[in-house]
Length: 556
Ligand code: FES
Figure 1 (cartoon, rainbow, N blue to C red):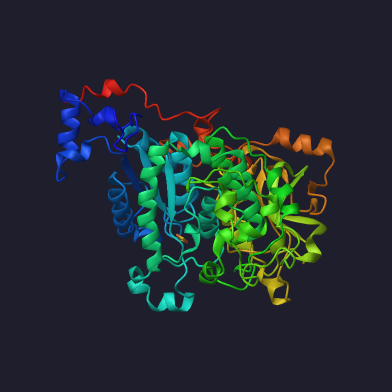
Figure 2 (figure 1 turned 135 degrees about the horizontal axis):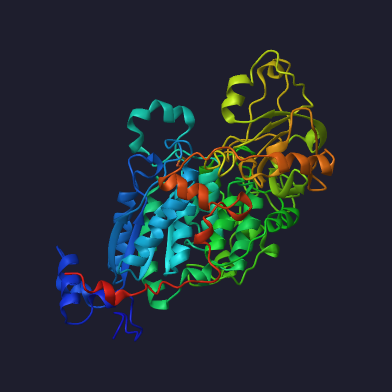
């Protein structure tokens, strides 16, 4: 049977719609309301997977964008069918959206697997909606293209002025925070059209790009260009290199291994460190630099950054455009100002540093570009907060026994401990020291940090305290030493004493005993494995072969 484009390959959707029997009749008639019968003639059925929600304000315009994608799909001879997924509003959901990233990815995965789809356009654009959609789609492995929503039209002041009418603009996260980082990662991975990540959301070219994305996904179905052909080890290499050149959020150090894990690709965190030593920091964007995302777009966006570091990229990596990353980057050049030349970087290395040591036998992460020079090598005595609540209650006590050399430690901010690994990692400087003019201290936790935060802040310490890592048994007064050049983070207590404390440690009571929270606590992996659920990682690609499809044909 033709796939509607002259090809002999049978499309997946035809199992639902093709042929004359009671089941295909039922599917066509049930889905065909409002469509002429010939839309089921074997043309590709394209899902538009939409994280639209009025509770996720930065995704609240995506239904309009979906209409532009549909135009392109229709024009290219496909049948577009939009469907909603769970949405994760970064600023709204408590305790943290990270608690539900995996749940959203399962929603995406199962929606794609269960429905008669041949390809999918992912519509998203927030800290967790982007990785969640990529993780879910990676587990199904259909032809897939991301259409990310870049922010960047309003300053904070303007935004406050129009808060009652925020829907007049399409977003507000206009720095290289986590949302911008993750949309940039989607482009560097090759899952978007070239330049897609950087067009401001309110720019009409964004809608034109959505239209072209709709056209392109139909072609991808005809080419059978699946996500597993794009999300290869080479693609992750390119994303990590680009992350360093962008000075992107440390949250990518969690999300990229999680996406890779869905494809059975091992991504040891040392890859981030190795590439950070090879790739200079080039993008002069807030929070580390001067400019906002709109200027980044005008300067050439992600392709211009990647063009500047071509020598370390895997240029043969296939992309959603249908050609290699190297071909996408041919002739691309940045402005030399917002996106610095390789010969004139903001910093000679990329900034993501992976630490190990007796305090972090798994790993820990620090963004060197956000740290203070005088703390890159430091030894100090710990002051320990067992919980975030204890920290909030006492951090500003006038008699808090700390000085500028103290190492502030927060326990129980990890995936199980938070729960959900909230962005608590940038521990506040105690008020008493702030009054003395102290602006940075060494701070250590098993939590994450917002992409817009900075300071000498060690994050993602694994194993986390609630899982019984050495962090769990640090005591106030212990000495801690960090040496960023040596990639070391050590708790300077004798090994026998550390073993004695660990043997006596008992886990805190779990946050949940039932429901999704219980599933999360029981199944979540450490930050060094991307905080995915253990049962969602793949040993290899599980193609969307959809199980006993004909069993479902018994539906009346
Ligand atoms: Fe969604 Fe920042 S809160 S993009």
